[in-house]
Amino acid sequence: MTLRSMTGFARSAGGHGAVRWHWELRSVNGRGLDVRLRVPAGFEALEPAIRERVGQRLARGSISISLSVQRDSPVSDIRLNEELLGKVLAAIDRIRAAGDFERPRPDGLLGLRGVALSAPAGIEPNFDRYKPWIRRVLQTLIHGAVVPLVNVNFPREPRGLLWTRTSVRRYDGLVVPTTDPQGRELYWFTVTPIDGADEGTDRWAVEQNWISLTPLRLDLTDEQQLDTARERWPLDEATASLVSPPQSSAEAAKVVIEDESPTTIAKIVATGHGG
Image 1 (cartoon, rainbow, N blue to C red):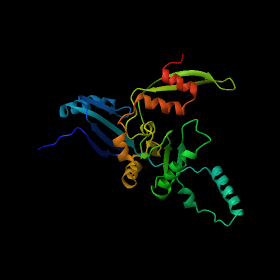
Image 2: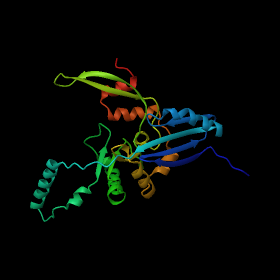
Image 3: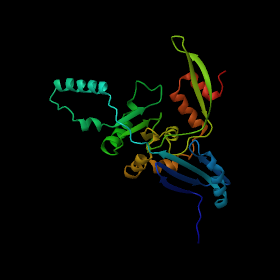
Image 4: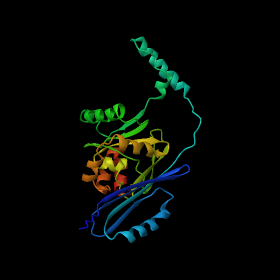
């Protein structure tokens, strides 16, 4: 007896010259055929052909297809911030004067990893409920995964950790004029996403109450580091794929927007107009 299922996952990667790409396809049960695409800006011309190919092979199911493209940056000259380095070394000398410490070696300073932590607005100064999660994040990054630069986003009610990529979506927004305390003109760019955040991205993770850990480089997500981290130091991806939807809802996005935006701006984003 042949068994068939509409639930599946596939991933493929390739490259040519300085360009590398990653395809991901996820499918879940559905009464009809619903195809959701996420491609980088400039690759929209691929969408008709993709939909046609999917329609030729599938008749039912909810299909999510994403393409990420990464261009390797050419090696550039290293620029050293000597003023900042001088301040760091001076601070180290003050610490050494207070105790028996050795001055760090240059390779030790250059090997320091960067971690940026972000939490929802409004929870300061009480971070007590985040302490177990912060401890787990630091244990993952310090004692396990060797990722040079990572961005960590905490939701309001965490339930686990995920390796993610940077969410890149299409938006419809407004320009809202205002002034700063000195009376100078300022302009807020308020955005309303056209589509929900896709599974595996940082925004999707936070909207589903997962802590996102995103390896970074100058070109947004460091795809190579992300692949390595997911393979060598898996987090809660398996659980997330079972209990969280493949695309965030408008309601989930609204909660995160309210957490990260000033009240006035959040209201404008939610209503879609400045009046």
